[in-house]
Image (cartoon, rainbow, N blue to C red; front, side, top):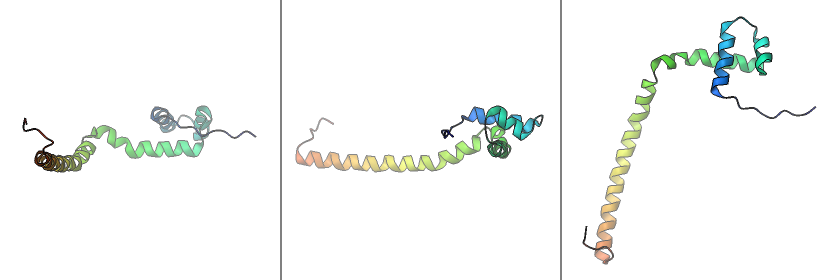
Length: 103
């Protein structure tokens, strides 16, 4: 018996299978056989679709706002740190005579 390699399914394939399972016109076993997936996997994709369906209609705005909040603070802190480092190094190089006064 040959061992089958592990398959990675795309999101669109998973959605198609989950929607077919939600329709209810075929049994999970029939859907699994048609799409060549395990019935447990079809059930899992269906559950995930039902849990995350509200995110589609939220527009992702809440997720974007939550992600941008901490990132902006982090970026501003990094900018400040780099500005301090540039000023320090500029002064040190000027004192060492390695940086011209053209600035």
